[in-house]
Length: 333
Ligand code: KG4
Ligand code: ZN
Image 1: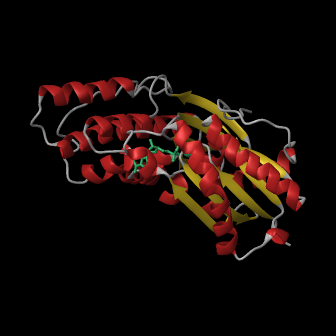
Image 2 (image 1 turned 30 degrees about the horizontal axis):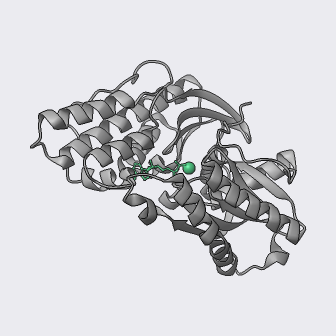
Image 3 (image 1 turned 120 degrees about the vertical axis):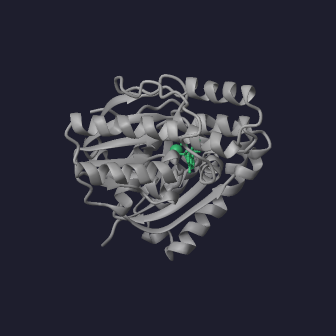
C-alpha cells in the first residue's frame, strides 16, 4: 500500500497544495500565485498575503485532492511548511494542516521550507547520488550546502547581505521590469549581451559566502550614469555576474568536498542561464546534475510533501502544539 501525503505550502505568496506518493510520485500539485495582488506594491505585502491564503487555501486543497483522484481515506499524513517565512502566511497553512490531520485521524508533519527546496530534486531523481553539493537560491536565501545523506546537511556558506533572488527582484524593480524580478530579467536578458557591462563579482574566488548587495548598487550607479544604455544589456550583464559567482563557487566547493552531484533548488534555480551553466560544469567535471523542473524550483507543495515523507520516517509525527517558526534555519548535521 503506497503512503500518500497531502502537502501544504503558504510560507510567502504562493498558496499551494499537492498529493505525493512515497515522497516521489506527484499525483497533483496546485499552485495559486498571488503575484497580481502584490505586483503593484513591487513586493510581497505580508498582511495581504495572509488574507489571500485564508481565502485560497481551501479551494486549492480541494483542487489538489480532485486532481489526484483521492479522498481523505487515501491520505496517510498532512505536511505543511512551518518555517521559515512570513508568520501570518505560515499560520494559515499550519493551522489548516493540523486541523485537517486531526479530523482525518492522520499524522501532521511540520516541514522546513529550505529542506523542502532541497527535496524538490528528489521528486524527479529519487536515486540522487550523495554527497551532493546543493545551491539553494531563493528570494530570501542563498546557501551552499553539502548534503551528505537524508536530513544530513553541512552549511558551507550563505549570503552576507542580499539573497540572489532579492538582487534579481531589486534590480528588476529599479529597471521598471515589475515583480517578481527573476523571470522578467531572465526573459529580457535573452535579447541582451551578457558581456556588455563588466559588473563586479563579489567574493567569487574567496570562501563560501555570497554578497549581492554591491552588485545591485553597481547596476543602479551604472544606469544612472548611462541613462541610454540598453536595458536588455544591463539585465543580461547583471544576470551573468550572479550566475558566474554562483557557478564558480559551487564548482569549487563540489571539487573540494568531493561531491558526486550538483543540485539546484529555490526559485532562482528556475533561471535559464544558471541551469545551462550548471549542466556545462557537470559535464566538464564528470558530476551528475540535478535540476528540478522549473515549477518545482519555485514555491510549491509537492516539495513540502516530499520532505515531509522523509521527515515522518526519520522523526515521526510533529506534535499538534508545535508552533510556526518565521526564522527557522536549515537543520544541520
Ligand atoms: O523559492 P521561491 O519561489 O520563494 C522563496 O522561498 O523565496 O523564490 C522566489 C525568488 C524570487 O526572488 C524570484 O525573483 C526568483 O526566485 N526567481 C528567479 C527566476 N524565477 C524566480 N530568479 C532568476 N531567474 C528566474 N527565472
Ligand atoms: Zn521558497
